[in-house]
Image (cartoon, rainbow, N blue to C red; front, side, top):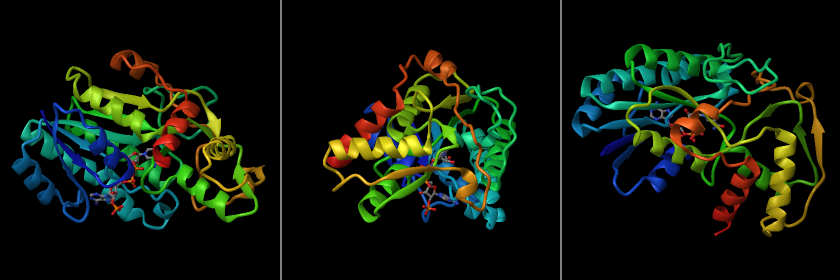
Length: 287
Ligand SMILES: NC(=O)c1ccc[n+]([C@@H]2O[C@H](COP(=O)([O-])OP(=O)(O)OC[C@H]3O[C@@H](n4cnc5c(N)ncnc54)[C@H](OP(=O)(O)O)[C@@H]3O)[C@@H](O)[C@H]2O)c1
């Protein structure tokens, strides 16, 4: 089977290239070789590569900056996936697209199932939701994985930022009233490769590591686990603060945990508790 990974230099894309099953021949593309906002370029590359499956791991992921770069966020997160979907349809390739917990408004108090109504709060979430709609309109049997609080050994993410700040600062303040599900890119990549092998599955799936936490509790766990591994010099005080005390350009959902039961059932995968996944990521980062 031949897979085309788009966004292959991002944190999920890098993880996908490093975990691709041996039976899958893959090609990985990203900016500047391919720009998903260019429909002709996407059509040409998909035509040339003739993949069996396309995995779209590319996105505009600057959640706050999206409020100021609205056109670019929509071009990449809404029009880009539509371009890929139309090219996939023409080439007869299956499409696995990745979306976000930020399609929800965070007013729930139990994990969101895939069929829960979407009501994104900011430009990033709205553009990603439009991308989902565009993909499903273009390709009836597409797979969409919504994930949350993604981190990995690569790129920019909360875990790497916390490790840096703990080493640089004397104390930290972290928001404690936003709750969600951390996801190690490796567990998401494993789910994606599993669904690639299950060609009968389609529609929206949720994928995060198991359990819920706040950014504050996540930061405390990162410090504890990093300290246990000798990855930071000394622990620093980490203080819980409210969202109101840490103003940002966009409003984030207060609660965005994803109900992943259907994914665990349909993919036949066991959930990994988020702190177990964090330990595994730190072990790999340390090597
Ligand atoms: N990060 C999170 O916390 C999070 C949470 C929930 C869902 N997600 C979703 O998970 C998926 C993977 O996220 P990630 O964290 O791995 O993202 P990432 O690290 O930001 O990687 C995205 C990749 O897409 C590339 N890209 C941007 N614009 C492009 C364009 N026009 N054409 C082609 N490639 C382009 C980026 O290149 P440049 O770096 O050069 O711009 C980057 O290599 C995305 O769909 C994201 O929305 C992420």
